[in-house]
Image 1 (cartoon, rainbow, N blue to C red):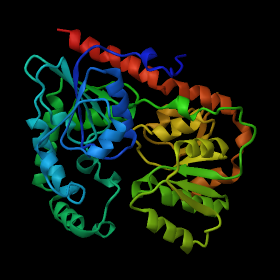
Image 2: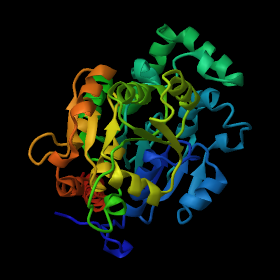
Image 3: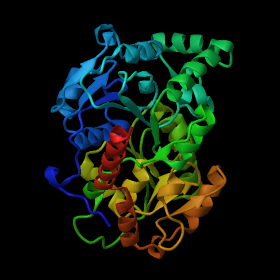
Image 4: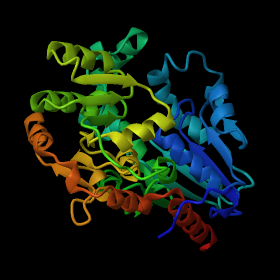
Length: 398
């Protein structure tokens, strides 16, 4: 089993000079963490984005040369991000990649629109086909009332064209951009199936990198505390409401770590259920606090439907925590219900079903060492090793 290496020189890296293409770069999440290790795999690479936040890049990507499109000069990019989304395909097409061995894009939305020079190959890592086009029922924002200011007006304008010929045109453009790619990599089996359904393309799979070593306990875990944990963005599609209602129904404590557009509504729900002493919101926490919470919790609750991969459940296992998750999406590939068991699934998506599991859950039936060992399958070094070899094989093939 490959173990994490703390020394940068020990990680598998390639001498290829790649043009690495990414969506707008201004916040840090799972995709940006993915990008960080792509850049580490190809240290001679340069980064291309439609636009970026200078302070964010200075802090998180200080050692790579970065290029941008005309969108860098547009005003109010944060306030008008939904409007500017429509300009991204054009921005990606305007980027030029002379002098590189190939183009490697990581796309949540439109990075696949970038065009490699003649004679060079374009490999795309697809985190998912754009959900606002292909999976509208799973998107976080469903009603204009969940937005403010000009974005509320823009969303109403977008809703007017949903399920019309204009949306079909956008889908057609997105499908053609995918079909122009030389190779496409999915981040999980569930994403591979989506790519086949949406684009008619067979994708390969390389799981995203998880910083397993940072989550591992520094000393032996002696006991768990009697509360459950939710960690992630507080958004409609993340299932926080389900977790809250299940914990209230089961009368078990829940700590919620994170923030998001649905936070105030969830706090209002807790107040309505008279559960302020039972449900606690912790907001953002440091990495060391995150590790400590995962190590001490009775189990992590992951109530998301159709998650592309799901880094948080793997991090929880790496910290020695059992995961209670809805049996859907990438989590089915990362959490084991068989021997050795690292988690348990609920199969009906309602709070009563989850509540039943919470009421009878006994963490002593699980061995935290099994969780820690299972998480080793998704380490950074394994990701870098597989990606390095895959890209080199593609670039060097005729």
